[in-house]
Image (cartoon, rainbow, N blue to C red):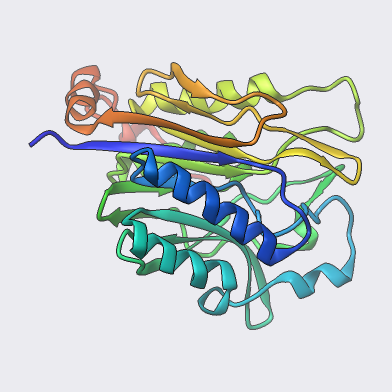
Length: 280
């Protein structure tokens, strides 16, 4: 039997009400599942407004242990009901530590564990180093009931070594929940096209489909540019959204065909690890 997988990305404008956002994501998940999705990706930190624009101590109260997080709890029940995989993006607290994390929920509702964002940005409008410790999990690939998925988080998507690591670990697809938009220091700077090109390059170099789910809309003056998309294994964008719309996009892939294509291109066969010098 041919292995196929249908991937979906959710794009929407969160409010700053946790339950309202969980309910909205649940609605999009139901829509995607009804259209045949196997793996459904919401955007980064969808439970509230993107709070990392400035450094405000009050925002640490948003963090919750992942095992007790309402989004994880409620979307686990939904995943089991619908038989879908949902990577859930949360602000995680573990003891005195704070992380930007993904909890991967399998299609039977089982939380498979947590990935903590490895690369943490720090710049105008995206002051995440104040809120998040660099992840301590390493890159992870999840052997779900629907396929092997690798999940990076936003800033991770700019790093080719993250994509290559997950591909080497056997990922069938790469997923990137995201929160990216305007650059407050330069109103003329629009990174949407290069944001896409970076991940299209990951698809090409690893012969793997890529899904990017971004938020959209104006959050107290910071505008997120949406343009969520799904590429095939050649880096071609097969479906996407614009800078304003909310909703769900889907694409289906033949994983056996992609495996053969990856082998034929020889990118993994011809890797020269003997020439690499790892700097610690």
